[in-house]
Image (cartoon, rainbow, N blue to C red; front, side, top):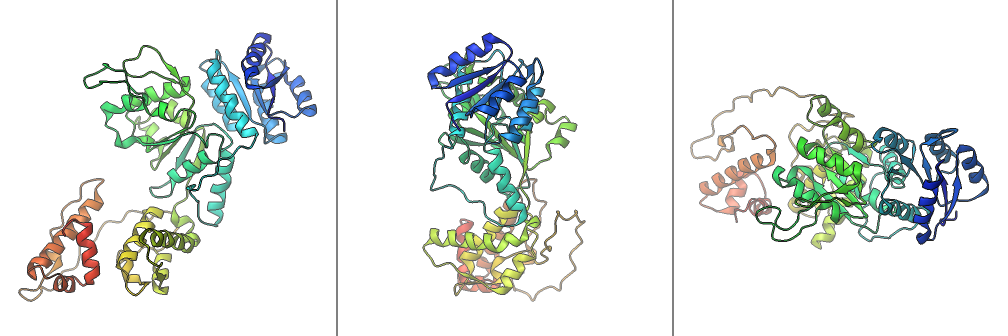
Length: 471
């Protein structure tokens, strides 16, 4: 494939000439075609590095050419020229496999950036990264994810990565970025739920000096930081409606206006987004804009829950323990058969992130270089692996227990309060902190005796004291 040859398909001679003049400084030789017939003839007799086609042609639609190229020339990037504001056609072209799109009247800088990205893709330029993440697992579910990532990396279409919390959505986004032509450019992740609403516009688009109190100098936003690369919008469902409108415009116009600025600045950024919520349901509820949903959800990549590929658990466990061993400088512990069996039947509501937390805790608590089932500290009634999350159950009242002898420490006396929404971990830590302090007080702060009363090892108590900041 000759990456310096481009097929330009448009029935307007001035458009073809403008594109040719724009690409000439890049060392690109343009081969013009006025219609589908001429385009098919040129494809048969010439190798091309990329193709640019208008959607409206005298003898058919540019979408037919996109489909033809995807079938007969799958490694040829093809971009489409759309009418201004015709987002539906652009989205349809991207779903058919188009590399990217540019709207009329197009900015020459946008066209050059798009072609430069296509050239890197055609030449197969790759950038090795020693810190490149590895997607573990050899189940059919994970193999499908790998194949999708490899395919999506060749496109510039927006992608919505869906899946439960802890399934590795950000890792998938990084792999898409690192496997594509933007690998040498920035990857900028942002948690949309972590930015205060009144700061969102300035964080995303930047601001000019003097635009508001405290703006003592110009500041670039996230779009500018990701220039030429990828902007990853994590938990995009948490964006307020007011910011959704501004984000939609930035994506469609490929330009942003900093707070206090008079003009927009063109941007060259690929948008990847992720959420654990069901966006289609939020659209129906009016909590998420439908037009932004369709703009972000051109292609959907779903990350499976760990319950859907339990056969990968042993491989994940081995990799996580090896990483913890490298970080601590200690040899990796063995996993007792009972511990392996316990992990195999656990439902993992927190998915891979929960597995990492469980093993990190067990790595610290285990003794003799072997992780036992008790070191995992899983709930007493661990739910067996199943293909979908279990239905909610109404909690049953705990059976009454006999009162302990006078003076004996009783963890049951820890007050059980209603956990605040979204802060279950803090709620559990508070219960743990209260139980430990009661045990310490009852033993006059004798840690060995307190550990015995709590039914844990002295090492485990020290770990919890350090974790809770009680040392």
